[in-house]
Length: 117
Image 1: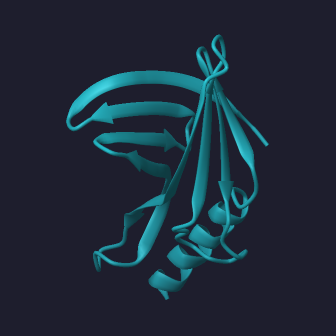
Image 2: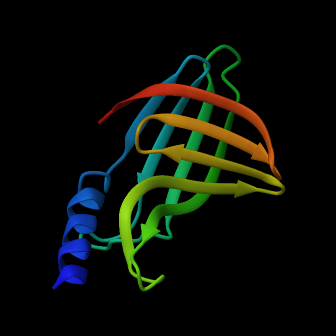
C-alpha cells in the first residue's frame, strides 16, 4: 500500500510538470518540456532549452526527470527535478527553482530562479 501511495504522489507531481514550463534566473531562461504520456512517473524524454538572457545564445539538451527512490532502491519517490548532460557538463534543474551546472564535481554555476507555468 505504501508503494502505491508513493507512486500516486509521484504521478500527481509529474502531472503538474508534464507540460512546458520555464525557469527564469538572473542570467538564463530555461524551458523544460516533458515528452512522456500523462501518468508516467519517471520520464526519460525531457528537453532543456537554456538561453542566456544577455547574449541570446542557447543550448538544447535531452535528459530525464529526477526522483529520490523508495526503500526498495528502485521505485521512484519524491520528485527532485531534472537532469541533463552534455559531454562532461551536467545540468541539474531543481523543482525548487535552482539551476546548477557542473563539470565533473566542480560547480560552474548555481542560480536561483522562479518557475512560470
